[in-house]
Amino acid sequence: MRTTLYQYEPEQLKALQLVELDMLKVIDRICRKYEIPYFLVWGSMLGAVRHKGFIPWDDDIDVGLLREDYERLRKVPAEEWGDKYVLVDPKDNNPLHRLAYPQVHKIGSVFETEYHWKHDKMKGNVSGERMPIWLDVFLYDHIASPKSGRKRWNFVFLLGKLYYYAKCRITPSRDDSLKNKMINCGKMAIYYMLNVFHKPELKICNLIERICQKDNGDYIAIFFTTSKNHMSPCKKDELFPLKEVEFEDMKTFIPKDYDRRMRDRYGNHYMEMPSMDKRINHPPYILNLGDGGSDVINQST
Image (cartoon, rainbow, N blue to C red; front, top):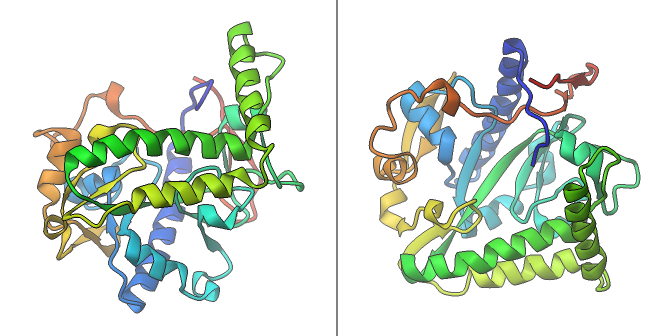
């Protein structure tokens, strides 16, 4: 959530994209070495198909794996990630990880929204570190049918919210409106109610996994999306074998039936460039690329 909109300077966005690209190269190297199938999803897949790289204004990369393949990735020795990156799983209870799905973090970097900078206090983050630059890892789970998956999505979505509030103590800010103060006080109350229990975030995480792995049907879907319409339920043979494609100066993978995935998410005209008002990204309030430079405080529009 953002309370103020920001804009990237062109060179700043390009530098961030290069960091994200390097993260993808590390994932690609590891997955090829250990024969773990991974593929681009969402805007990253669209960028690969339409631009052979980043969508020009995009500022993140999303990858997908079957859950069973991700569990193999988790077992890869930590040293494979080097000294710049770390694979973070919700079950690790990393104090800089707010969400109920995995991410790759760049160590020593900062990518912080004004909302989080002002309001949230991460449980266990005693040193006051800020959220780093990350790459999202979305897991595909097996479902009996698209209909059964959509029903399960509602519960997973709610639990994902509770996971966040179990880890983040959202505090009101002095410059909040009365309405926002009341909302943030409510979120803080949820935090304290959940934390009556010992490590509630891990209990929620385990419950999410049990729900996501409830059956072993012929379909697969992503449960962690902002809308059940974006679950992308499909048969496994619509994803595999993966298609190798160009992405900037490297080769990566997208699903076999990428055209259907794109049409489901972006419509039949996904190859056409959108109007300027629909070219959305997520500029942070504080950005540090983790390369020894100082923090950049972005200005609001």
